[in-house]
Length: 485
Ligand code: GLN
Picture 1 (cartoon, rainbow, N blue to C red):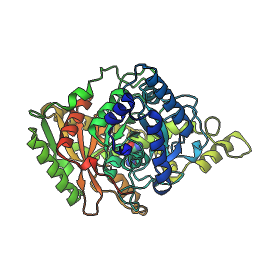
Picture 2 (picture 1 turned 90 degrees about the vertical axis):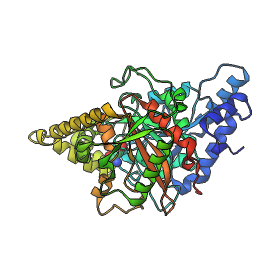
Picture 3 (picture 1 turned 180 degrees about the horizontal axis):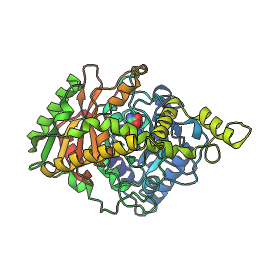
Picture 4 (picture 1 turned 60 degrees about the horizontal axis):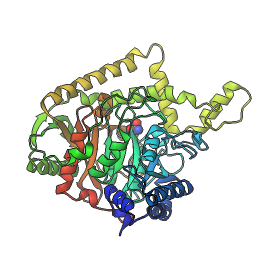
């Protein structure tokens, strides 16, 4: 049995039946990490002992005939911006290089309660700010399809881990595309749930009105299984919604007949790469052949999404990151007095991109500028949300490319950082409006790099996203291709 190629359902089934022990399975994936991590940098930490202990417990429960959780024995990689009790959680920053949280994030407890085993912490852009993993304070993760190319970001380590078969599942977070863009660049499936669907308790906050945690897997079916465990209200997160969780697995096999898919005109305008356009159009044909119908829709204000996002996100980041001051959690720089200690600590341990965003955000929130920037961006955000509300009166889903291009090369945007921000053009609107969005692989470009298709749905309708993605994956095998490295 080629363990690293098994689906989540297959792994859990084999472990439950006893023909693969949780210990064997865990050791297999830990071995994959040991073999590949020097080359691709997907992980910042490996949880050998914790994972082996957890696997032993699962195997003991199986031997004792106890009832098992829905993910019993499943190895999971967790983005390093999500707190894991007793395991260093750096958020990709030197600031937190020695931070060991005393508690698990709610999603980590939920995964563990379901029987999943955390095998490691994945690489990321510092404090989730970035689209390439080049902002990791430690080393960048690399795209497993071609190591000269970025895996995307900020959850680039999670995407690399899943694509390179070092973990069957990884957890990411998405503030402006950080699950979907790396999923697209690495040829995997990634879901940003509705704002409020998954608890963020224990997520190191970047921009609190935009952040969501979600699953990154090979297939939509795997994604649905994991999402079932992640989703749900949490009283520890006041933004988590008391909305019932759908049965995602039951939704997968419903036929697409009657489904109305909106094709957004603004997603196919100038700036979209030809090969991406062609593959997305082919995917539309596949969905039509399954009984879905399409209609052209407009989201006129999405063109201002980037401008609004790159005001709102830095503003919220400047506030959220004020807690990293050398007093608690963090490393501390040597200094004479308190003021100097704050400034030296922040100067020494934050990276360039993080400092840039703190400066931008602090400026935009300062008195005299607030109305011109944050308030105005918030108004634009409302108009984008209104666009979505209107579109969803006539269609069930919105389809388009996830990113205008395939994975770019390392350093490609070094001289023009704005170009990297602009590549978030199709992803940020889902965060600004709160709707759920998913990226699935829909082909490869002529250089052999994956292309991603984005689906967006009404708030709390993850079921339709997963259903459509799964139905598409019954007709295509893009999600099953594996890279050489
Ligand atoms: N690329 C975007 C940024 O740099 C999105 C990051 C994210 O979703 N965490 O802010």
